[in-house]
Length: 87
Picture 1 (cartoon, one colour):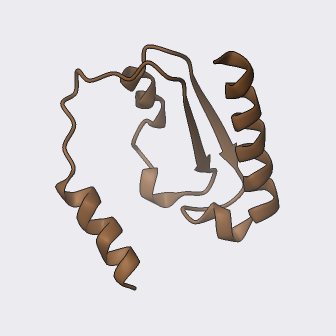
Picture 2 (spheres, rainbow, N blue to C red):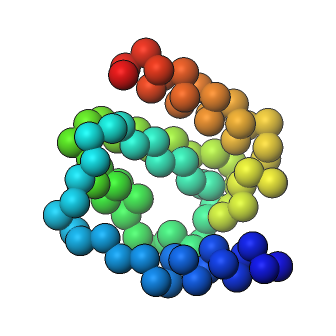
């Protein structure tokens, strides 16, 4: 529970100016049934990088990693391999 509290606190306190961009590619992985992002555009991550941004949906909700670990880690592994070849 302390780890979750620290995570939420960091999220609440973090602020990045909207014009800041990284130079590395970004992989956005979301659960296709994540109610917490409903109405928000995960594609907005593309504005945070000068490189490519890839969006992948995995079956599950906000905690898709625990709901569908095999599929989640397959996507993570594939993204890491992709970025190794690009960089």
